Image 1 (cartoon, rainbow, N blue to C red):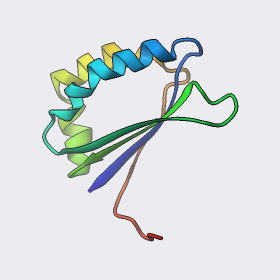
Image 2 (cartoon, rainbow, N blue to C red):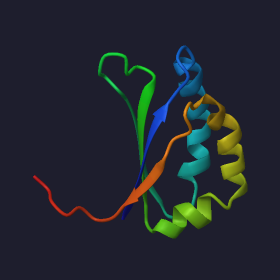
Image 3 (cartoon, rainbow, N blue to C red):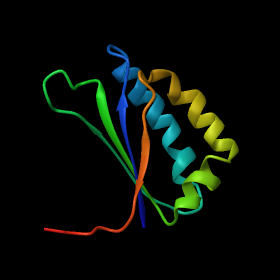
Amino acid sequence: MILESALLDVLPGREDEFLAAFAEARPLIAGQPGFRSLELRRCLDEGGGSRFLLQVGWETLADHTEGFRGSPEYQQWRALLHHFYSPFPTVEHFGAPVLRA
């Protein structure tokens, strides 16, 4: 499994609007071939209430980079969510764990 990870810095004051849009956008990604899981977590550190951690599990890297990003659903995802971010997030992909505790 591949883990996609992104820190999402949402424009301050728009967190509730972002969460509502994310709830609308979630089915767009969850229905994609190769989708395994999704977690969205809010930062608890002081001043971090506008920062979220998104982690999405995919079967393969191509399921995300070619499949989802090349789909019509991704265009809807972008329209719903991308205007909330400042700066635009860096998305990274990670392979199998190298250590577990």
